[in-house]
Figure (cartoon, rainbow, N blue to C red):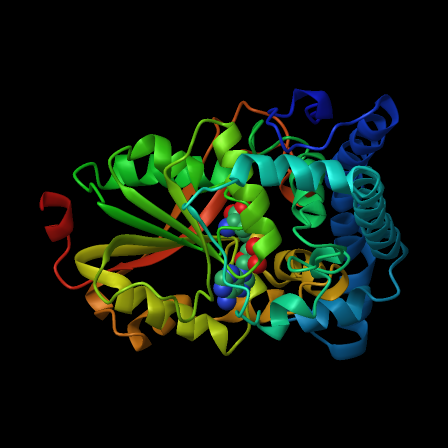
Length: 396
Ligand SMILES: C[S@@+](CC[C@H](N)C(=O)[O-])C[C@H]1O[C@@H](n2cnc3c(N)ncnc32)[C@H](O)[C@@H]1O
């Protein structure tokens, strides 16, 4: 059995919430519950499907389930799945509750530390007139009360502080001490697949608190980097966190990824990490259109996500769909059924310049990752496209 990294091994910075013994113990319990879900409960769900539920479906229909909806029908009364789902949902509730009570009691201190770090910086550009889309502001995404945009007081940073501290528990430290595995994986992929590519301007759309932006800073020290999000609290916290980690030249800008104020053809790399599944059917193609608008000839857009359902067997699709059904991820299922390469072509990228790939951050010997992937190196599905002539910007 792989063990999650204990919470006390998280990377420290000045806006990370201060924890007591019981806070850390709660987070460690969450990480161990996730390990049990992945390593003990999840395999039992599969056994129950193969040994009982699929047989019962066959008796009723004369054939196997052909898609995740039919697997769901087969599994709805299956005790192993109900226990798995109950424990998983409750683990998320415990994780959110632990994070909320941690940040609520130090809300003012967190706000003041962020204000102090951000004071006078031109690299934090907030837009109080920006209205966040309802798919962000009206959803308690993955059970996070108030979602990304909630502000319980002026200059609030409690939800991002909860997100930062709790993510380490949810993933059992799989993202590394800085929760930045996706950013490091993207850098590894770029350096391996396109070693000549040297972007002068990088745009991170839906940067959150910048976990996965900062590895790009380290990898491309000359580049101008703009990290964009609709959420002012995420940007306030992320900007303060970056400064506390010695990064003071990334611009954190409040804007909608579907219509940023950046100029046409002004960027060489436009990327997202774990953003597309938290958008909407309408926003997704607009984010691709915006990526196309922002890129210079020879520029690259790359998006890291969980793999699409296409090509996975129906049971695997069903298991991966849990977040869409029970974890307040309303666009999860639709995103994983979307044909992202086709949408990139529709956004204006040439079909021959669109690609799919995989990337990963840690050697397989590293332990810990969430849920059914637990114990494997974190890895992502990559979809992207080059703008017109591949490689031109890299040589410029
Ligand atoms: C799951 S978080 C991912 C954050 C970050 N990319 C990371 O890898 O840690 C999704 C983020 O996307 C942001 N977001 C969603 N839709 C957006 C939009 N239309 N424009 C800008 N940000 C958006 C949310 O506010 C949230 O911070």
